[in-house]
Image 1 (spheres, one colour):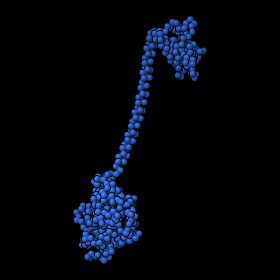
Image 2 (cartoon, chains in turn blue, orange):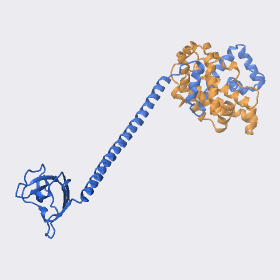
Image 3 (cartoon, one colour):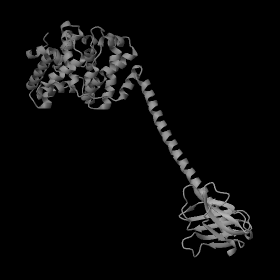
Length: 254
Length: 187
């Protein structure tokens, strides 16, 4: 086949030129007519040429379409969106994992805050107890019936301090220059009765930096007490004092 | 690489397309979606338009697959011809041009044209060969083939665009096609 006015040099490339639309309009029309008429030579020539010309598509720089194109196409064709089932399961799993992490973090955060609140509440209770104790001591000290006894003055390095006695409330001891407490030991206060009776245990207390405060509540009779004494005893306390007596404040001296 | 998706049996896929097996459309897209989109994008240079035209090309193939010969049909050249035609049509319609002397008539997409020849190359090999052959062309030869394939220009239009005599352009085209054909079919 040789279309009208075809350059003889183009004869060999006729179908490639046709496939690329590079023939003159009348030549294009002539080849097209032969194809439409089922010309076997034309069809075979074009089959061969399109293998080459369609391959020019691979010269295009590779680009990736968005995932939306696939979904739209499957929807338009009524085809199942393969992989979607796994995709949503994966998405759900990722969402659940994220929620778990958030929940865990929130729980951890809430837990931390609850611990902080409990700690603050504990401090508040302790502070309230101290305030109540301070008020109690103040009330004790300002009572007209409270007796004050000083001890240890004019000694080289003895314990010294003050003892306050109130018939209705008990005995309050402020002591300084106390010796360090050995391990497993504790200070114990004693009421030393007049008339030579055995000392009466009056409570245990600890000291810090040589300073100790002890309040033994309960009604007492100051007139029956000769002295307030302190000894070091085992931590469980003793029923009778262990020598030496660290100090003894004579009640009758005031 | 395009080559990564250009594997598998066309005949089995064609048979399933002819039966309108819903999964066949997914396979068709997975195998050729990227190369179809790439060639259309190269032509229209707009991603949104390229996706629209890619969808049209695949649906056109889906709706016309029943005419394919499962034993001898070749999907890739057919699909790529449809894809290029859609894109060139778009370029011309936006430029207000009538369809001219391009191989983009509906008859050019007839499935009977796309059967296996004696060259039973896999698409993977075909892509490799055309790129290798294309690299052998000089700049002018590459340029005229790209203007023809990706912009749908005639030789007269190319001569005008490049400011070269028509005879020079024809020589570049002829030499380029001869070189490609020799490299492509003989390699």
